[in-house]
Length: 548
Ligand code: DHE
Image (cartoon, rainbow, N blue to C red; front, side, top):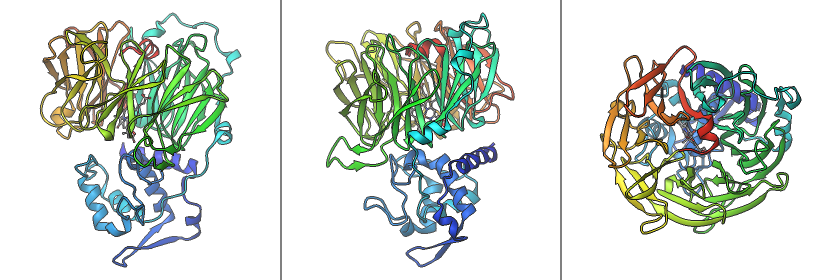
């Protein structure tokens, strides 16, 4: 599987011309480290190193290796982080193999030895130059596969589209569409490399995916079998996409958030024709207002109360409220908040948006209609909520985040009254350590689910914890069922709010396990050769209406 991944990455990288053209002039690139040891790297190794870096490292160290949540990795340093040439082969190897207490994972045992060895050299030479990619390049990549006029005017089937699930098969570069009523697989569609998230159009008709290769794929659920109707590449690297949801703008526009290049692209949501691109580089929100070139767009949500998207620019810590009423000249309001904005979601009213500034250990609260910062709340080490989840009990209406860096769930009161916008309760999952990525509940449920995907203990990362939302006591730890292995990740409820779907990936026996939310018994296990490392799952109704 790892080899397959690498192959896919290499193909993608070749297509991106991600390699440094200047380097190609020489067959061998020679670099001297401080100890004057000569290091040689071939063009082929540069390409392979770039592919490994893009797949494994760019998420934290930035596509241009200039640093992001992780430090920069430049041969001569950048004044803040060590020069990789000074670290030398042994120093770089020590970091790769052992990780760091700051959160870098240990790659020994995950990356094969020859890849570790290659990275110790690759990281000592100048990074490959990232070619420009703006609206013209996006336009060139645009493929309208089925024009609007040739699509069905109404569904060609009688299935309940609102209970369809889009499920990401990350390593296969595919998205499966599953009928949530019958649990039948309706289609497994080739999308992009390592699809990250899915979003549904405001009508629920279309499902859009975005991959780490920046490709957006548009799937029509009205056709007899769900079908890809358009594709476009919004950038080289991305994590998010969202649609216009405000009344009168349903299914009209789509926004793409670029990690590389760092930009916001607006597209026609019916065809994926690009309409405008706005770069997000700019001054950081705090301190000396450092100018940041690689200011990546992390989470994006669409307001239901206004014609705006909330786009979170990670490195600058600026929350951009993007008014899409004139999509070729979008209105942009930037709200300074806290650095390293990552993932977040709405409170139960949809009026406030809460986002993790993960490496700052904070949650930022934004009043969306009034385009204002409400509060910055210290929670714990590396909050990671996904979109978070909303529960209600005697303490009030609570929005919940898990943490990557410690074993803690923070419950923030969102309704008016004493304690609003403070952590009114903290609870612990089972065992020790962090590693939680996602939490989930449902307005009709009395359960709060949490995973521990990145905890190093296999017993914890393969299990999920379920809490009672009233007592906040841990009710049950659910181990991977017989015949299923790997790490448990991400939850999604069905439309009725009585089933929870959990993915198992990174093991030998991938699966989607469906639990009865009331009894916490396994209801069904979806497996098969098409179920390959499933990650995110998105129910059409819940995603369209932000039910979480
Ligand atoms: Fe994610 C959401 C970025 C690693 C699975 N991930 C997000 C979002 C961002 C993000 C910005 C919010 C999107 C939104 O709501 O608009 N994720 C990143 C990274 O930069 C990071 C740390 C490293 C990387 O290189 O990608 C990363 N993410 C992972 C994983 O390792 C996961 C578990 C599997 C994978 O795809 O590689 C993973 N991320 C997810 C999922 C969501 C997500 C399933 C959607 C959660 C939701 O319910 O909305």
